[in-house]
Image 1 (cartoon, rainbow, N blue to C red):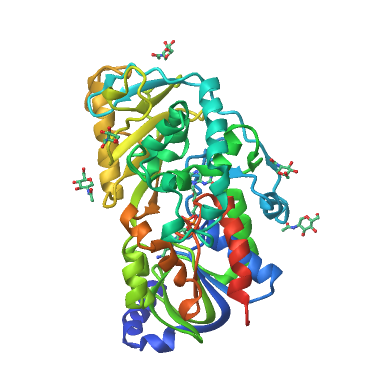
Image 2 (cartoon, rainbow, N blue to C red):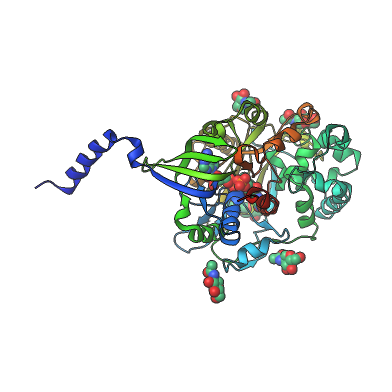
Length: 476
Ligand SMILES: Cc1cc2nc3c(=O)[nH]c(=O)nc-3n(C[C@H](O)[C@H](O)[C@H](O)COP(=O)(O)OP(=O)(O)OC[C@H]3O[C@@H](n4cnc5c(N)ncnc54)[C@H](O)[C@@H]3O)c2cc1C
Ligand SMILES: *[C@@H]1O[C@H](CO)[C@@H](O)[C@H](O)[C@H]1NC(C)=O
Ligand SMILES: *[C@@H]1O[C@H](CO)[C@@H](O)[C@H](O)[C@H]1NC(C)=O
Ligand SMILES: *[C@@H]1O[C@H](CO)[C@@H](O)[C@H](O)[C@H]1NC(C)=O
Ligand SMILES: *[C@@H]1O[C@H](CO)[C@@H](O)[C@H](O)[C@H]1NC(C)=O
Ligand SMILES: *[C@@H]1O[C@H](CO)[C@@H](O)[C@H](O)[C@H]1NC(C)=O
């Protein structure tokens, strides 16, 4: 008698000779959504459960939630969020938790740490003295007043982005100059260390992209005018696990689009599950793209030359985050990377990408959070090598306890956040880039959401989706 294993092998050898078509499922949906992160998962729930249209959500990984990364300690069940830290209380945001019965709170207090400024390239201490917290917060209040009149131009998306001749001059000057112009330099350290650090050289980037990476609601949150919350149990991933449960088999996991055909009447996508190798053909009347429109991501989307020409103008940073548990770190510390030129009090100089931004104690076991800001080409392997190099520099210079110079970083977990902070040059903005970008909305039955098309925070993207969904569903 043949064993089950040999039968399985026999079937395995037969399958490749069947035509791909006979093996693929064909499904029909009102809306196909690519990407199950913040923007895609939210839109999928709203469209299906509240607008009663059928959906298929195509997600590359085997869970939903994208840049949300919740580490769970196996022994105690305690969690630490090493990707997304919290949700801004943008109007309506709390409703999305309530509908899944997820209780929320202001988050557990993170440990208070001593920030030690070090040049991670050399391991040398940088005697940088930041402005007091009170001064930083006062500068953020002032910053908010300056930027308040422009909010609707960038938030929640670019629908009202001004024509080239009407763009505020301040949008296009380097952000360092902008801060200096309005006497806001004291706010720079908190802008940089919270969310500004991914945007390239924050002093040189055009102000509008710095505003995209920090902006109105972060300023409100830091000055106590807007709440920032997290689920009380299970970390931030708890939300997306609830979404996954709700959407059930409407999500195609471990899958990407490998081929597509898009017209004004609808779209046909060939979706491949990279684990089972099985294809599903999705016929949908509308497509919502909720991933960063990098070359790699949009290649299978049958782009027109206009779409391709427009989207290829974006450049990105690549971000990585992880947790390490080497005992030589001191749990009183937040080791923060700055160039020596920041001493004694220059708030406007930063380390060049690619770089490790920090090693920060998490409050959980021996775990330190590592943040890596890569340039347009930095890969996950390079990010790990860079982390090791920085670690070596700290060890060699005696910044850590023990003298073992050949210690490997011990990764408890590591996440690729990939391309972020989509931006273009000032020249391209002046040539009407954002007007061109929004011409893609709705063309060939395709709509676009996510970080490159709107303000790049979880709940701000939900707000952007709210405005987009009626447009997507018109005529369905
Ligand atoms: C370290 C870090 C900390 C952050 N902290 C906060 C915070 O505290 N608060 C906050 O509001 N925001 C935070 N952000 C920003 C926030 O995470 C983003 O704004 C948000 O995740 C962007 O949502 P998105 O839908 O555009 O993309 P994502 O959330 O990245 O989702 C994209 C999804 O698409 C999937 N995918 C990618 N490519 C494909 C493909 N080709 N086919 C199919 N699926 C694909 C991905 O696996 C992912 O699930 C943080 C970001 C980082 C990197
Ligand atoms: C939330 O709780 C209510 C009341 O207990 C219940 O009716 C509902 O089904 C729950 N929803 C989810 C998504 O669990
Ligand atoms: C969120 O904002 C709403 C409306 O302003 C408010 O009622 C609610 O208490 C806030 N919740 C949190 C957790 O910040
Ligand atoms: C960690 O740093 C604190 C604060 O500087 C210091 O008091 C403590 O001795 C250090 N611990 C170790 C193990 O070096
Ligand atoms: C970043 O920009 C500032 C201001 O233009 C400049 O002084 C600094 O050298 C730049 N840093 C890097 C690493 O390029
Ligand atoms: C990104 O960084 C690497 C390593 O420093 C460098 O070799 C590469 O040229 C950089 N790429 C870009 C596009 O700047």
